[in-house]
Every structure is written in structure tokens, then in C-alpha cells.
Image 1 (cartoon, chains in turn yellow, blue):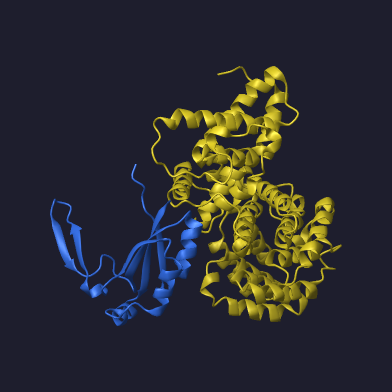
Image 2 (cartoon, one colour):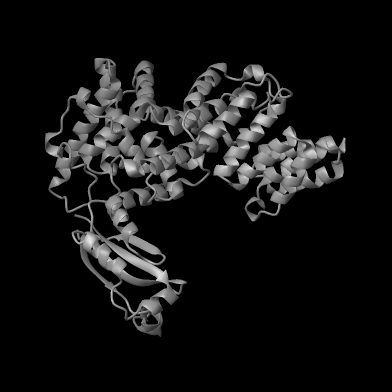
Length: 417
Length: 111
């Protein structure tokens, strides 16, 4: 073990890990030829940064230093394996530099992150594998951390990642930005993965630990990365807007005891104004494309809430209109549920409740606790406490975690009192 | 260049009706268009002509009438193709005028 690096160097390496991991790994995949040896080389480069930067100082451009080191290491590994190597499937982009003659001038490295993103989010991989690979390869999270974030054992997650990497190699999933003809669909696939990363973290209740919170941050990082790589894409702008406008309310979503606070009762002075301003700017850009994409519409709904001075001033007819556009283009059960809630606030709780009751027949919502909770809430507002109690009891049975259960128990206690 | 097996699945009824017919115009057009990628291929007799040979676990075999896995869709034919990568293989698979769809499997490279 080398002596521990100074705190300053350790912080610089940690910062470079967060900021530069995807760039360094993507640039190394070209040289290494396959993802596994690229990952090994990049890990070695970060390890050597700890000792080398301690001795010689932190380089002016840590990302370039790491890229040079990782590519050099990958070439080493490549040569060492050369004698034993057989006809293994390789992930080389043959149109560019061959392993032996790799260019070590950091300024000349092309940004390969987009290629890596499209490989990780290839539709030939299962969605859960796409998410795991994205966190592992683009965010540089350890397998243990990815496992913790999805509440799975490390062995299960390791098997999932190994299986996905094996498929990439065996089926020759390309390391390439897709052709224009399929770019639209493939970008949509990538955005779905990033959104899933964000919501998994954002919707996590307080009891679920730091790792899930970090997922929301990583979702924001990924959305920013995509924005930098595809600056003219309206759907990317829409996703980043959605992540910013939803995340802006974070600080107000829990009280001092870590309990869930509904938007109705949130202290709006705690909302992040900087994020809201940035999100609204991006939203304008996203809405300029016709017809607006699904993330832009969701971001527009978040913006109506964010820009409203109080719960009472919420522009529910506007929100209802946006949900109607969303439901017309993407009629998922959860969108229908949210549309019914908006209808309740915009028109009347009895009307909203009638739609919620219809949705109760949809088997896809049968185990979805938020439907029963929404019914309970509308029943309370209509003064029907007996029926409300039954609805909250049902939600309590279906609730997925402790914070939600405590919240529902509190609502039941209010009804009893 | 990587090789892939395209397994063509179709509804059992379709398989039976098409059996014995000459190659359809759609397939002929596909094979002409993709001649450069096709290594081999064949249409299969319908699944009721299939016989499955299973290892019985004690060194012997059990021989049964019918395909290996019973399902609504059955394997109606196959192509062995060469493609630069999975994206190209999927593009070719989309052009197969198959009934239900195509399963694309990379051919294992001998090591």
C-alpha cells in the first residue's frame, strides 16, 4: 500500500472521478478494445493518480492526465495479453487509430462519451441492465453501490453487469453513435434510462439511505452530460429541464424529522430558485419543438408548480391541459392517474374521484398505492371520512416503504381524531 | 466478420399453409437484396414433423414427437448471415418478411 495521499490530492482525485470518469473510460475503450480491460486500465490510472499527484502535484488538466495514463495502461495490458490472446470478440472502432499506434496527445482525444452512452443504452440490452451499465460505466459507481441503490445483493448486480458486458462482446453491440435514421428512437431510449436513474433516487423516501439520494444527483449529472454532448436536441433540453424543475423542491420535501411533506404543505422559500430559473430557460427551448416531447410536457407541469407563489394559487386548469396533452401522446396508467388528480383540483373533487374510481378497474394500477392514497385524499376533501379510511387502509397494505407507511398512518390518525 | 443466426418465427397455422410452396416473392426479393450478407438458410417443414431427442440424465435418450418447446409461434426457417455488428444484423432481421418475427443470435466464435 502506498502512503495515504494528502487530503488535497484525495479530493482532486475524487473530483476527477466524478467529472472525468466517463470521458476517460470512453477514450480508453477505443484502445483497449473491450470494456472490461478499459475499466481495469482506468481504475489503475485513478489509483496511480493518488500517488503520482502527491509527488508531482495536481496536473492542470486532470482529465487529460488520466486519459493518457489509462490509455497507456490499456496498451500495456493489450501487449501483455497479445501472446495469450485468441480470437476474442473486440469492441474496436476500426475506422480510427489501431491499438499499436494510439495517439497519446490528450488534446487530440475525441470525446467518445456519446458512443459509450449509446452502447450502455442499446435496446438489445434489458432495461435494468442498461441502467446498471450506465451507472457503472458512465458514472463510475462501484458494483456494490449500484446494488445498494437498487436494493439488490451485490452478487445479483455483479451477475447482471457481467451478463450485459458478455452480450455486448458476444453479439457485437457497436461502440458507435447511431445513424440519423434511428437516432431519434435511440436518444429516447437513453433519456428513459437517465430519467429512471433520477426518479429512482428522487422518489426514494428518507429511510432508504444516502445511496438512493446520490442516484438523483447522478441523474442530474447524466442529463447535463447529454445536454453538453447533444446541445441542439429539444428532448434532451426537456429532460434536463424536468430534472432541474423537479429536483428544485428537494430541500422542502422532508421535515426536520425526515418525514415526507406534501407539496401542499411545503415551505416554498426552500425551493432552489437558481435551478428553477435554469430549468424554465431550458423548458422554453424544449417547447419550441413541435409537437413537444414527453419530458418537455412533464417539465412544463413541474414549472407551473415551481412558479406558483402558493398552493392556493396553483394554476390547475393549466396543469390539467398539460396532462391532457401528455395523456394523448403517452397514455400510461400513471399519467391517467395524475390527470384525474389535476381534474379534481381544476374542476371538482367529485369529478376527479369519479375518474379515479374508473381507473381502479385497470389491472395495471391494482397494486399501485398512490391510486388508493389519491382516492383517500379526495374522499377527505369531500367530507366522506369513512370511505377515506377504507382507501387509506388499502394504500397502507400496498405501500412500498416505511416513510409512505408512516405518512398514511398519520392520515388515518387525523381521521380518527 | 461476426456471424448471426436469424431464426424466423411464425404462427403455426402459417407454417403449415406455406409448407411445400415455392419461395415467395417477398423472400426472393429479400434474398436478392441481402445476397452479400447471406451465408446459408432454409425453410423448415412444419412443427408436427419435428422429433425431439432429449438426454434423460442417466446416459440415455428419450425421443418424443413434436418440437422442443411448445408455443404458439414456431421456428419456420433460418438464415445464417454475416454482419459488421449487431446493429447491421438487426437491420437485416427487420427486412426478413417473417410472420411473427426473428430471433437474432450471435454465432459463437471458436476460441
